[in-house]
Length: 121
Image (cartoon, rainbow, N blue to C red; front, side):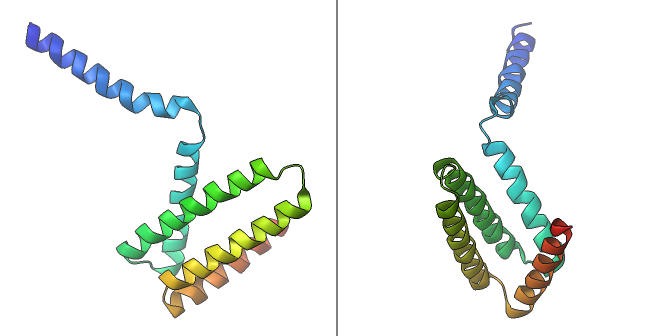
């Protein structure tokens, strides 16, 4: 009986540990999911290796975190926000170019232009 009770308590503790971060709503879970989705789409188009996938996902995570922080800090000054976002985007693409091979970078540029064209409509 004690073993059954101990097993139920352990399962409840593990389950609570997994549920609690999702319920916190602090945005880090959403950022991680979004970074993973971005990386997955890029991997489909650019044929990333496993090592590249890990590096690009970390880069996407950093990009999304920096963008959210910039929006929070500079929400009152649109000009400074635009400049900071442009600088962050340039740094992202520079770092991405260091990870991807030339053919992959061409595929990324095509994907980016198609993605932008779809969003403009």
